[in-house]
Image 1 (spheres, helix red, strand yellow):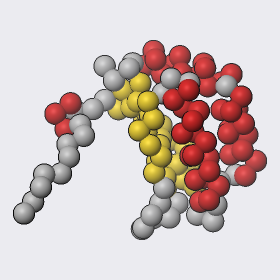
Image 2 (image 1 turned 60 degrees about the vertical axis):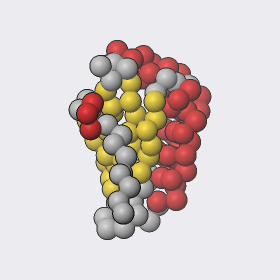
Image 3 (image 1 turned 90 degrees about the vertical axis):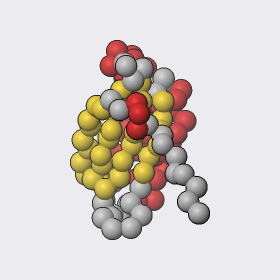
Image 4 (image 1 turned 30 degrees about the vertical axis):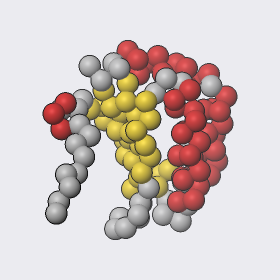
Length: 112
């Protein structure tokens, strides 16, 4: 069963450029370590201090294997250090979700 790690970040609204760089860095690191990166999402309009990251895995065991690989990945370590040094992440919450298959990736219908 596929699971998705849903990460909610509370970020410093004055350091969104730093968070965006952090997210871009994960764009290379996460797939290399075995995660199916669905995307990082930045504040656009409305609340200016909440961002999200979504990563899917074939199973919870696959997630655990990913975490092991991530801990020894030099680019991953450097990205964590970047976040700690720049202090743009104020809070981070993780939830693990499974999709209702009939609802996944339903594209908009052409409306005339």
